[in-house]
Image (cartoon, rainbow, N blue to C red; front, side, top):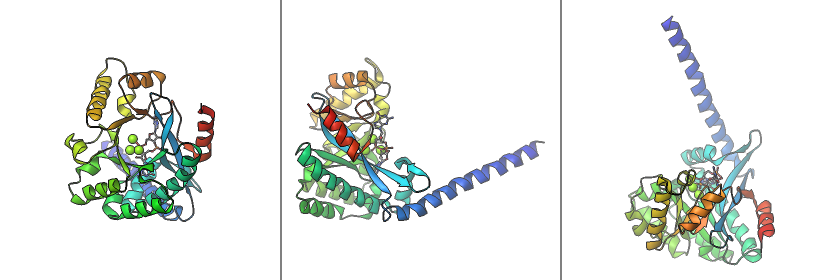
Length: 280
Ligand code: C2E
Ligand code: MG
Ligand code: MG
Ligand code: MG
């Protein structure tokens, strides 16, 4: 009896794994055509200055409109794009798209408007000269370097290779700012904040989710904000969903907030509509 049961479980397990592997394989094949077929689009999520309530920046978040599967979330396809190296092509498309959008929004919204772009560690590893491309493209569009903020994760700073440090410096030389995404979830060594001359820290949404006065998460947020400010770094809180979270973070001196309370990531046209509605 036990043997039969065991065999059944075994038989059940393997097809499930095969299916998952096949689904990944299919997605990675489809991903190859997605850039050239124009299946990607960007959504923009406002980043709000908490003291004034004004939208100062937007994070560009990629979406894949798959011909059969509908919208595929980046948490599903970005890891595949990283494994296959396609992330470089995708990342460059994202940058070009965001830069073109900036031209419009700097003219219509605010000449100081910034777009933040997520940049994968694989892009740093595989394309050591991308800072030149980005700088040249910004110049060709007559956009200031500091129109763009790149979002990196703590893991990248751990890569001991001198090349990452050099590239980050080169981006900074082009005026491009650097933001540390998902702060607090990686293996952060605080010394990296000094070493890499970071402009922004984004407090991960896991610290914001259960935020309450007097809680451990509140203490962590307060400590991050104080430390960041002493180092001349601005702080963005991610995942703000309630007015209470916004209030607590603003009272703690947090500079910017991002989250569903303000808006979900929106296609460009909807983002513009939102800004027009909330303009003073
Ligand atoms: P991320 O950079 O940390 O982006 C924030 C994620 O949190 C986004 O998920 C956003 O939709 C979500 N979010 C924003 N506000 C809230 C909120 O109030 N509550 C909750 N529960 N979630 C909120 P999304 O768009 O699914 O992106 C997931 C991740 O995929 C991003 O995390 C980023 O790491 C990656 N990603 C997205 N676009 C790109 C891209 O163009 N390039 C690269 N390399 N990675 C990207
Ligand atoms: Mg991000
Ligand atoms: Mg994040
Ligand atoms: Mg992330």
